Image (cartoon, rainbow, N blue to C red; front, top):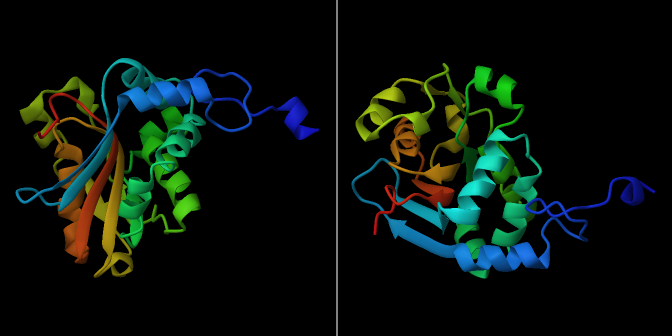
Length: 215
């Protein structure tokens, strides 16, 4: 009865479907899918994993997910990603998953943290704990998307803090965000996380912008 009243739909096109992703949209995602795993030596984190270039269908989908009250799209994104065996192999090497936090004000406006929903969907599948009570944002700031490279770095300084440090001591941490542009947000989050002495920090993002492409 519930399925009849509230049928399952594809998060991207909205059509009724058995799962959270229809075949047509899955094929579109395949055209944009370019997994990158890169070791990093000059930042506070150790590696970055991304899946899409931030343009076209992917850009429109992430903006809809993030700003147009479409939290259900997290299930659709992750349903596609977890079909990729290489991603499962990477994720299962980590001990804990931490989403990039948003401020209380932003949470009230949006109603959800888009990075947490992605992290939670991944966690449900691979059975790795999500820690949403460890890293937090202490104040609201100007949205990074509205700033240039130098201002982005300054904008995030001093806005993140830690609690329950013992939870991540000597653990391999996967920090999850939606978009990587200059990397200033995840780098600052990683700097703060290092205070708890994790063994390693990896960054997982849905998409990388041209500006953020490290290749």
